[in-house]
Length: 87
Image 1 (spheres, rainbow, N blue to C red):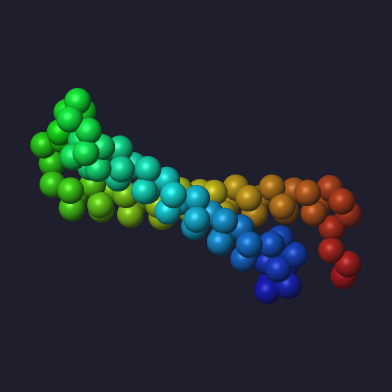
Image 2 (image 1 turned 120 degrees about the horizontal axis):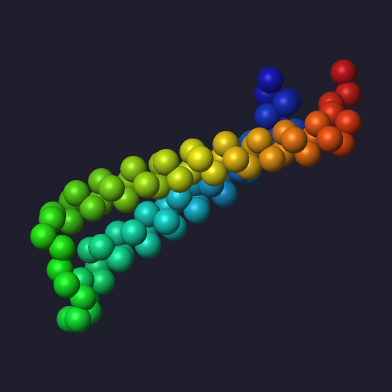
C-alpha cells in the first residue's frame, strides 16, 4: 500500500493541497475580516472575527482534502492508462 501511494505521489499531492487550502483560507479571511477593517468603503461584517477564523480553518481543511483526492485520482487514472504497476 505504501509503495502504491508513493507511485501515485500522494505525499506531494498532500503538500500541494495543504498549501492551496491555506492560501484559500487566507483569501477568505482577508476578504471578510481584513478588507472591511482596512478599506473605509467596504461595509463591515456584523460577526466576530473568531467565527471567520473558524470558517477559514474549515475551508482550508475541506479544500485540501478535496484537492488531494482529486489529484490522487488523476494520478491513478494516468497510472492505469499507462499500463499500471509491475507485479
